[in-house]
Image 1 (cartoon, rainbow, N blue to C red):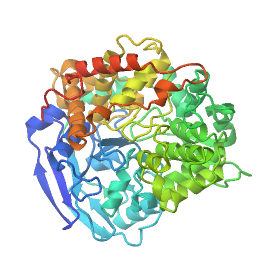
Image 2 (tube, one colour):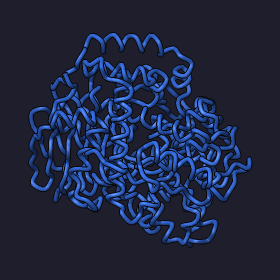
Image 3 (tube, rainbow, N blue to C red):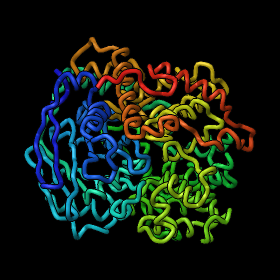
Image 4 (tube, rainbow, N blue to C red):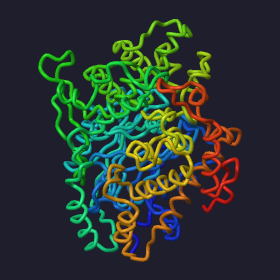
Length: 590
């Protein structure tokens, strides 16, 4: 029994109509759910070369075959579209408590095309789709909007995802929010919503996804809880969360600082996980079906300069982006900027990079405005001007590629395909550098997750021989996570054997092998690469290109990337994927 509904919902915003379309069983077997079927539908439904803001750029929302089943970490949903920031493939996932409600609508994917003439929000259940006027919500922040559309749906049990003002104004790195603080959309998913005048979506229903072996799923649910909930890694995440990475990266000199000029932030001790819990009132917060509880619900204490400010975070990536790159070494200031980005609906990682880039442009006198590193009010002003496309914000809202051209600073801009890297400087972590280059959505740390391998010593960061094979293996491993759509942090519980076991239980097929899952992952990753080639035929040689500064500008500890070594790793990567020397797939199995 396949764990699928074998159908998807197709919504047309132009006519405010919808229809249900069957999915061939063979397609589901080839691609699985989640990222697999999402990538397949995006590739087959999107016209080649379509502009990301055109009505024919589809938005595809789904959960994986784990759905609402008793699988630890299956709290995430995914979205797939063409990125308005990179003009490439875009997939993103978010946690919280929405995934189970999407699953209950009874579809393997929800596909949205078209553009509404007026602001609208959609209500989706397993029986119908309702279209509601959102005129009074247009311009409202994400927190207000989420509360409002849930209340208007008149459903006690439901999930919702929404956009804020930045997405309405087509900021190309605007994102989608759910459960107030959970984010989806590095690369501009929110902007695609905004282009369609889609303010948000509410999900609920009573559908039940079939499960191949429910008894085995129940057994595994208990087994993994017993085996992993008290492990050292889980305890660390539950107590400290991702900010525990701040001292780790600073101590090895790989904490991106001062717009990628340095690897150590002066005063980093003031933004550690320990300092965060000294200054703020912090409580662990878990997503649905999670025993890790890595989230940190943080509130300012009495006497704070930001009274009664509550944020789930900041996460490590927000500390790196606003703390390191912008040189703001103050926990409360970073919490404040985090909250501003959340309510406006902007990606904190790209936002922090763009603010730091603006500080650097000001330092180099490439712009007239005076903005200074370390100045939180300057950072906040830039963020607001971006969200409302005010003055220089209108340039910055189009992303790093466009802004760097306007300022004559293309040589210093740090990105891959137009998306900025995460907070792990690749000059110190060569496998992470390869993962940044090969990620189909741009410089993403999560598609291979290889920073963890190098930081933990699983893969020696001083060794490059065999590194490409390791990166391919991690990419394939995590692609299975995204096919199920489960949380990356369950990497401590689910290695290849465990992931295979979960697939077998969901499918009711003990014959599923690791090798079959590897083949499926390679098929999905190859199709995403082919999408990028199809959409960017004149940029093929640049799709895995890293910034020159990583090869030419050493960190304080002398670490710098060797270009010949990188190109050797990339060549090996292409061979392992079955692509030619230019990174073009030799065959694409659609």
